[in-house]
Image 1: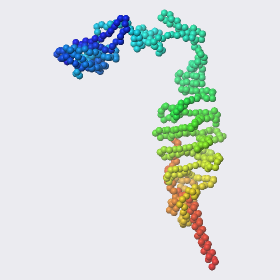
Image 2 (image 1 turned 90 degrees about the vertical axis):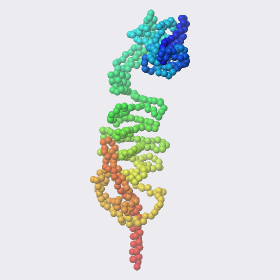
Image 3 (image 1 turned 90 degrees about the horizontal axis):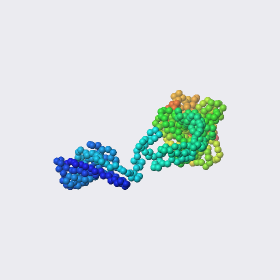
Length: 531
């Protein structure tokens, strides 16, 4: 099967003096369908697959469609289209008959011998989309091209004279001139100064607004900025950042360090030292948080601080220096807490509040607690409690001597006690105890603050055989390293301790039992005397 005697007709209707009709996007096509011997194919209906290419062989069709045509003595008529592209190059037509392979070779679509020349243009037919962009040659538009828009304005554009401006058309030229009388802009300034309006038609500049074009720096109130933005003033407020955006995520001011590397870069630093002992580096006030901080070190393993504060000075006559001074007050509050410390996490130690004192002072306190105020409720200078379960759980643990000047009380109210029973055989237990005189092995256990000199007491292991209820299995922790220049001090270990407070009732009962024996002996002696 082959295709021969191909012809196509593109018809354009043109009428002089009348509006040009819209050109239909179709091409008429006529062909003769024959077999391999050149004989016309039998009359009948055939399905033609029509494809249009921009290459003569292979490639991908840019248009295709199926037409059912009537073949009479081998001749058929059909049309190609519609097309949504312009015929600005040579295209090749490929035809397949009844789902057979595409016939070869493809047929090129070429121009007809003559084309009619358009004598008129339909009104509004030429739009900006039909015009080529203009190009500038010196002070003129390139010849043969059209300016399609002026400053974004299309269609008709008019020049209108403003105040003190005259527009004078002279031939192909338009002359625009100022007529004087204050219509121009004038002013003065120095290099680097940022110009600003100081009147309706004049500009000026001064060193209070300065641009360093070499280093790309802006100075407000200074002619020598040493940062991307430096602001100086002799006003009460040098810089105010304010926002009315209502959201929990609102941040009125943010400083981000965007560099990398193992450096201790500071996002915000406040310095105020007008005189020795005066100046506030930062003052924060909030409805819920006066200051909220967070230190997040990720997986670096370094020492991370939520807050690090330092109070220092060189003079000897300074009254006080506070590393942290916290005040909480207000009426009708559930609790007023000056300092709250909370530590949680896996690791060697979690310490809510840590106090450390050092120096050549008359008095040194690691933690100092004091209470004052009015009312009948109890007040505590230091209060410790624990809710954890286990033998090694203490509300307070002191590594060293413990001194108190007031009274020492142990909870002993009857309201807390049940299953009350008398103590029997206390004298025998007390007589079995072995008091000892000893000194502590300070050289072996360097991580524990053991006292010096000779001491008196009992041995926990010996007491445990007689009064096991008075023995506790205790735990001594190693002192954790709290700063980068410290190491963990000593080793953690377990040991036994004696509850000497509860030994007192047993001693009392032993005295009572001994007194009973004495009274019995006295009675017997008196009876012997009376014989």
